[in-house]
Amino acid sequence: MKEPQKFAADRMLMRLARWLRLLGVDVLTDASLTGADLLKVGRRERRVFITRDKRLRTAPDVIFVESNTFRDQLREVIIRLGLDAHAIAFTRCSQCNHLLVPVARELVLRRVPPYVFASHDRFSECEGCGRIYWPETHPVRIRALLDSIGV
Ligand SMILES: [Zn+2]
Image 1 (cartoon, rainbow, N blue to C red):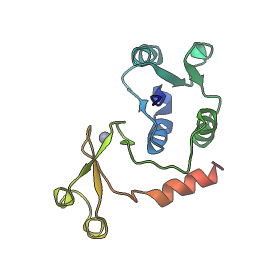
Image 2: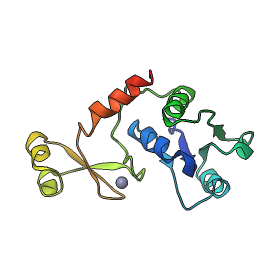
Image 3: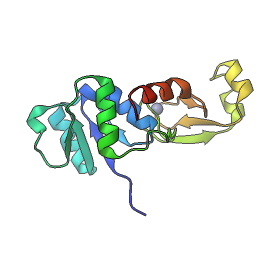
Image 4: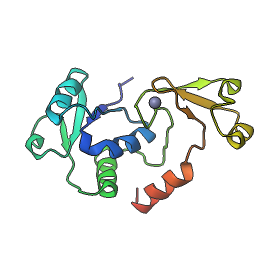
């Protein structure tokens, strides 16, 4: 099986990175690193670098994002990467990029709102930050934005 492509995104593209993770894409970010440093880190892990830095425009393994606004950037990158925007995956934490793992329902009792606990059977937990996800975490809002940009 071919390993899925992995990415790193510079700190001007943090919001874009969170949205790509919602689609299951592995996107490393680190707000403490400059673009050039993150590019180096990313290359060690064979990540394609997504950037707004014009100086890196012609570098190999770099996707230079042309668009200025978040919505246009999201559309541009989804199209360029050939992502399926209808496959909201919930396999990866949108905040920190770690994988989600299934967690027993009784363990999330005090960690999600009561109405969420009452109406869901399956929960996942982020291995990195501990955030709890459930199958319908914000899908309406997410779908509405993806629809509005036509992907
Ligand atoms: Zn997390």
